[in-house]
Amino acid sequence: MHSERARGKKRLRLRSPFSLAVTQFGSLTLPFNITDTGIVAAALTAINLTFLLLFVFCSLLSAEIKDRVVAFVDDTAITLSELEEAYTEALRVNPGITEDEVLNTMVNRLLLLREAKKLRLEAPSMDELLREYIDLKIRAFIRIREKDLIDFYEKHLNDFRGKEFEAVREEIERYLIEKELNQRLKREIEELRQKAYIKIQLNSINKD
Image (tube, rainbow, N blue to C red; front, top):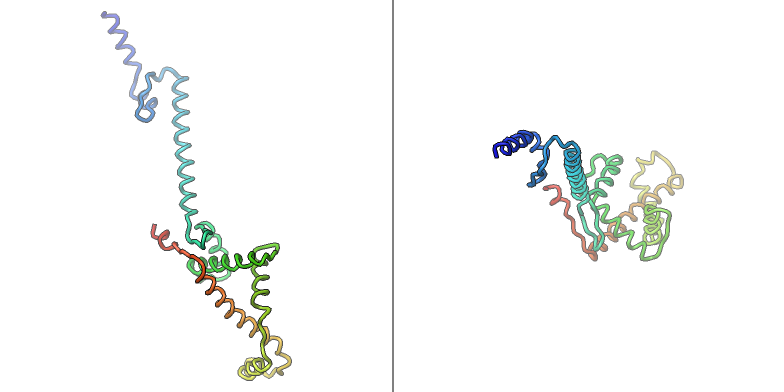
């Protein structure tokens, strides 16, 4: 019996605190010691795998947070990553633009593109499809009267620096067409927004 206790003490001495620290996995302490290099290597591999899985999970969680929905247009969602991409592009053209303005522009764009698809219009890109829809649905119906051209010319004689009416007629017409186009487009968008279900939740996400 004395020899068995000695052997027991000898075995206990082999289980150092470092051994227990390495082999403990979760709430389970594995019954082996640090002298078994093969098993220790397996335990370390398991621990490394756990850290890797945790890293992947955190990365996926970060991606999920980044891609949270910032707006709904009926059954179509606009994600945070889409907004950030559009906002970055918009800043290059207009440094003073806000995220809210970009998001509302994205909503308007979705509404107009949806109308374009209803007309079964086709184009190589979404931008060209949008232009085709605006040209067909709005620009084609704009007519500027000759009287309006002359009135504009006479009110802005100083701006034209003595140029004859005929020399600037086309320039004036283009300007008035674009002005009328913007006004009609604004009314069109307002009507589409009234008919659609739109939910903006950017502010709640920014608070998080």
